[in-house]
Image 1: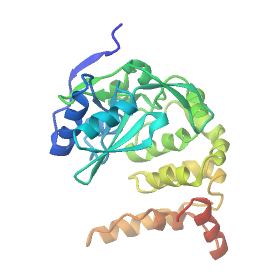
Image 2 (image 1 turned 135 degrees about the vertical axis):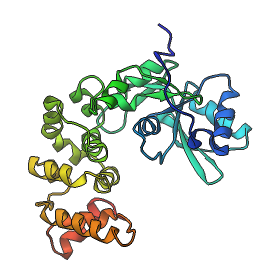
Image 3 (image 1 turned 90 degrees about the vertical axis):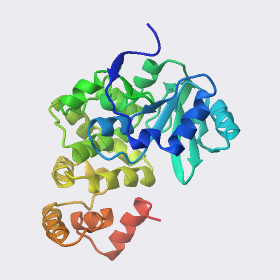
Length: 297
C-alpha cells in the first residue's frame, strides 16, 4: 500500500489561510526539497466544520534538520521549538507555522515520547489522538483520511484513534483534550466506554505540568459549550486532580447569562480567568495557590 494513503477527493475549497503570501512561501520552501507537505490536524478539521481557522500546522516527510535548511535557504526564520520531537516553527511576516516531520512513537511515558521519523503518512496518523485530528490536506485541498475521520466529523462524534486507554497512556493530556473537543464542537459522547476511561484515568492529570494543564483547560473555558462540559467534569471528579477548588457550576451558569446580556449591547472579550473565578469558591491564599499551580506567570 502506498504511504500516501487514501485519497478522498478535493473536499476543501482553497481558502485564504491556505494561499496567503506567508503560507505559500513556507510551502514553496518545503516543496523545493522534493517532498510533499500537507496541512494537518486542527486547521483541516476546523475548515471542514466551517469554524474559524486560528492555527495552521504542516506536516512533511522531511526530517527536522532538513526543514530548517529549506526554510533558511528561502530566507524564512526557522526556530527549533521541539526538534527532538520533529517540530520546527517557521516565522514569516509576523506569522508562525509549526512544521512537524512525520513520526511514530517508540516509547511513551504519558508526557514526553521518544519518536522515530518516518515517510509514511498513515503511520503518522496512527499516533494521533482522535480520528478527525488525523486528517491531512494538500495545498490544493485534497483530503487524506486514513481512520474514518471524515465520517466521524459528519456524525459529530469524538473517536479516539484505536484504544482510548492506549492513547491516554501515551499522553495524559488527551483526557483534557477529549473534554475540550466536547466543549468546542458540541459533539456526542455516545462512546460510553471511552468517556468512562477518561474519567477513570483522570488521576493521571496530576502528573502533568501546570503549563500544559492551564493551556488546555483555558481552551475549555473559552469554548461555546463550556458550562455543560464543566458540569460533567466537576460531577465526575475529573477536576479534583488539577483544580480541587472547583466545587460547583451555578455561578458559571449565572455568568453565561450576564455575558450574553452584555454582548447584546457591546462586544466583550471572553476571559478564561473570569470564567475560572466563577467556578471556584476560595479565599485569597488559595487563589494564589491556584495561580502558582497552573503557572499563571
